[in-house]
Structures are given as structure tokens and as C-alpha cells.
Image 1 (tube, rainbow, N blue to C red):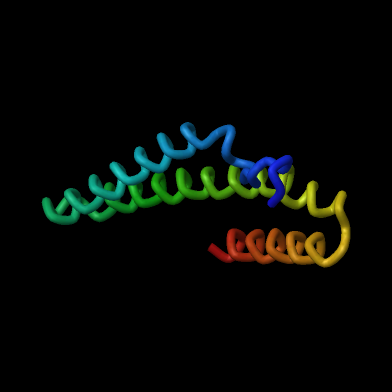
Image 2: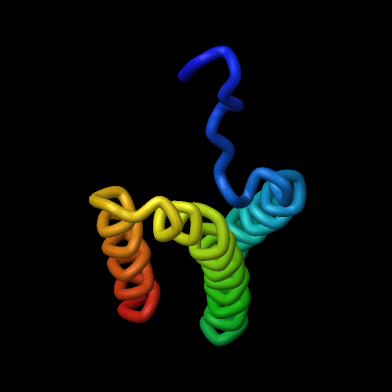
Length: 101
């Protein structure tokens, strides 16, 4: 990096605080699930909360994927070359993992 180049920023950096808030909320949900199991709550109630937590994590993942596509992949595609191929493959692999989960 030269003195005139800005440090690389990831696409989500402008929404970092929102992502952190959402992840902290999810962390709280995980602690709540632990308490539900410790307290021997009804199975369906626990499963309902697992589903809510799963959807919250999927929402974060889709947001990050969107940010990656609109920032990192677009920038790499504009530049072309090997980096573009790598970024496209990374995005494709991430989408495949999300679809399987």
C-alpha cells in the first residue's frame, strides 16, 4: 500500500454497528436457549426459539452476502483478472453453504 492508497474496507463496514447489534441480540437468544434447556422447558417452545435464532442468523448472513456482492465482487469484477475469478468463486461457495444450511 502506498501513502496515497486508502486501507481496504470490507463492504459491511458502513453497517458494522447494526451487524454488531444484531449479533449481540442473537447471542442473547443463544443464552436464552441454554436457560430454556436448563429449566427443562417444553420441546416445542425451545424449537420455536431455535427457529427464530436460525432466521436471525440467516438474515445476518444474507446481509453480509449482499454487502460482499455489491462491494467486493463488483470491485473485483471491474478490475478483472484472477482476483475477479476468486471473488466470484468465494461468493458462489458462500451461497452454496447458505443454501445447504
